[in-house]
Image 1 (cartoon, rainbow, N blue to C red):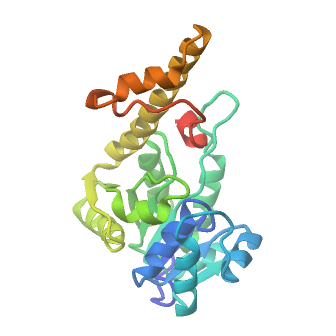
Image 2: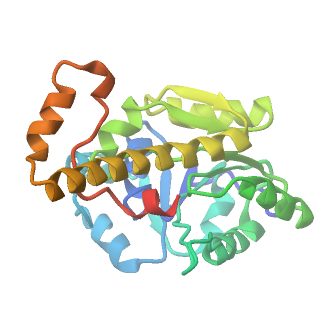
Image 3: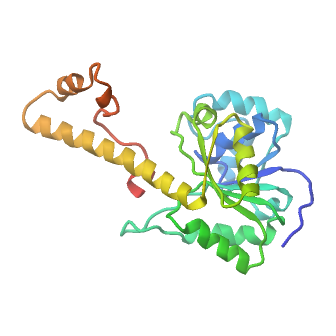
Length: 267
C-alpha cells in the first residue's frame, strides 16, 4: 500500500478520455480540483491535450478551452499516477458476453492494476454499470490485498451530448455504507453543483439497473405500439398525439425510434 505523497492531482478519473469520464473531468477541473485523466488511449489524450474534443459534447469545447490553460487538467497512461490522488473515479465500461451476462474481466484487470498504487484512505468511486453485489465483491478483494481504501458506488445517469449540463442539474445517487465515505463522495459531486441522494451501495447498484431497465422498457413499448399501428395501416403519429395531448398521465410515453446506447440493452 502506497502512502499518499500529497502532490499533483487531487482526483484521477480512470477511463477519463471517454464519453462518461471526460465531461466529468472537465466539470471537476472547472470547480477547482486538480484532475488527471488516466486512459489507455494515447490518441484521445493527445487530442484533448491539444485543446480538441475527441467527440461531440455540448459546451465541452468551451469548457476545455477554459480549464486547459489553468494546469488543473493533466493526463497519464500509467496507473502509478493514482499514488498522488485522494479520490480515484473509475468510469470504464463493463461489457457483456454473448449470453448477455456481465463480463467483468476488463474491470477486474483495471482494478488489479490500480490496487498497488492506491493511497491509504483514498476514496475509490465506481461509476461503471455494475451488477448488484459487485461493489461488495470488490471490497472483499481490496481487504484481502490489505488495500485500505474507501469505496462508493455513484452511477452515472447522463445522456451523451448533454453531460456538461446534466452533471450539475441532475441529482447524483451516492451509494456508501458508512457516514465518512458517504460525505466524502457526496462532496465530490456537490462541488460541481449536483444534488446528492444518499443510499447504501447495494441500493445504488439496483437504482442504476432499474433506471436503465425502466427506460428500455418504455422505449420498447413505444416501438411495439408503432409497429402494431403501422401493421394495421394507421398513422401512429396521429394516435400518439391523441394519447399525449394535454393528458399528463401519458406524457412520459416516448415516440418511436432508436433507443440510446448499449447500456439500456445491457442492463
